[in-house]
Amino acid sequence: MLDQLIQLVRENAQESVVANPAVPNEQNEAVIGEATHTIASGLQDALANGNVKEVMGLFNSNGQIDSQNPVVNNISGNLISSLTQKFNLNSGTAASLAASLIPTVLGSLVKKTNDPSNNGFSLDSIFGSLTGGSTNGMDLGGLLGKFAGGLDKDGDGDVDMQDLVGMISNGAKQQQGSGGLGGLLGGLFGK
Image 1 (tube, one colour):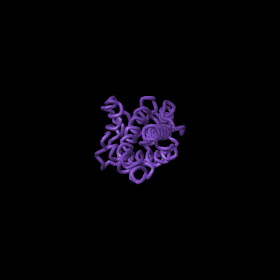
Image 2 (cartoon, helix red, strand yellow):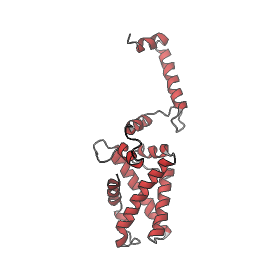
Image 3 (cartoon, helix red, strand yellow):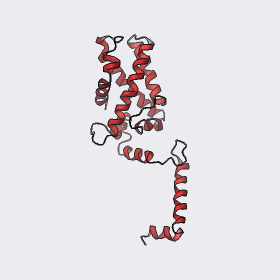
Image 4 (cartoon, one colour):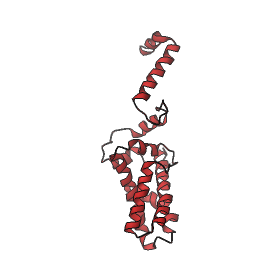
């Protein structure tokens, strides 16, 4: 995943890094490498800290990255800090670079991951890579599709037991309206 991510950063760094006069040309590759590392470690940190919902939210965005997402904010803040400390960029330049590069790269990553014709990126491989394989065997793309398909029935932005209860309750009410218990049992037993 890291090789693919560095390629995405390179593709999106032309204006914010390479053509930026505040970034010395001899530091372009190092800055691109730092941005790549910061994105990967930021996603990994978010998962490690239990922010799975926020990370999944990024991949459920169709490439429209919300800069207010806490994961995006943390990654941007970490990149700003790295750029000022390691490359002696002033904070304004570092903030500008992070503000243009991080959402663009994440948006590109999401679009490529969600594109069924793109075999280079998959949610399963990204999460597998970020979690050391602990998500192997899980169909994260399928789960994301279910989340995107509207499991948040109570509209609170969270998919939880209340949503499951709401789905079951609504389904039961609809079943009652279409034949009651007899219709339900007939459906269960194929009658």
